[in-house]
Amino acid sequence: MLQQRTLKTLTKAVGVGLHSGQRVELTLRPAQPDTGIVFRRVDLPQPVDIPISALAVTDTRLASTISTGGAKVHTVEHLMSACSGLGLDNLYVDITAEEVPILDGSSASFVFLLQSAGIELQRAPRRFIRLTAPVEVREGQGDNLKWARLDPYHGYKLSFEIDFDHRVVDSTGQRVEFDLGSGSYSRDIARARTFGFTKDLEMMRANGLGLGGGLDNAIVMDDYRVLNSDGLRYDDEFVKHKILDAMGDLYLIGKPLLAAYSAFRSGHALNNKLLRELLSRPDAYEVVTFADERQAPAGFAQPARAW
Image 1 (cartoon, rainbow, N blue to C red):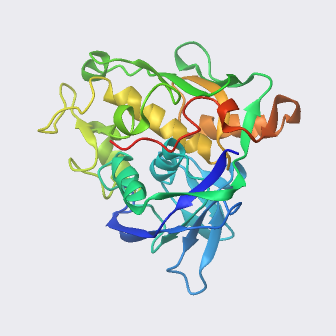
Image 2 (image 1 turned 120 degrees about the vertical axis):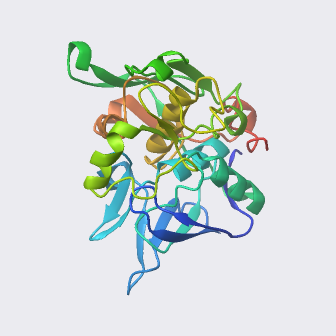
């Protein structure tokens, strides 16, 4: 049986929120089978649990926000991406503010935290959402066109194409494909950082966003160059970060997908719209388990390799 996974022990991190600039403490705890991933706002007078769900996403401006009632958690996608890449099913995320810490701007720090805590197999079958028909969402036309799509596939692979009119981004790879069965999430995707442009920073800060951002947790560019002294971690770091984000956004559906995801200029909003479209079409998917893990697609049978 292909089993569910949680952590062996708890692990903690302290950082600041990318948009809020607030100091925040994060505690990742093991959870029982079939719990799913649950964010817990422990700073509120009465702690509030927010289980992940595509329908719990209530804001997608520059990040994915989940909420229940009046309690929110912003910028969940990098931690969720790490959970997707490592195959974690059950986890409590205790958080002392309303935004997940940005740490270094990638998911590498979350991968390190999760792997340091250790991954434990549980006595319950891992459940997958397997695509049985294509699902697609599109917005805009011509130069404003963007789309995202899921197709049936025995495994999990993602391809993404970006289209930025910027000399630095244009000089790097604008399209990348990653297959969980043949690649290594930790090595190939996890270190890709979020990025932004100095020209957008003033507008963001005027809107109360990006208050915790800087060269230590993002790639920052002016009109001509990357301002970070250490340059890029991957030649195609920009589009790889879009894959990282997409893996986090899609894992908010609550189960790993067996599908091929492809997208052009998509973002948090369109990724969530794609999940909602999928859930509205019961004919397009089924929930499956693998009694014999040898029948599972490559990349799912073994916990993800370390660095």
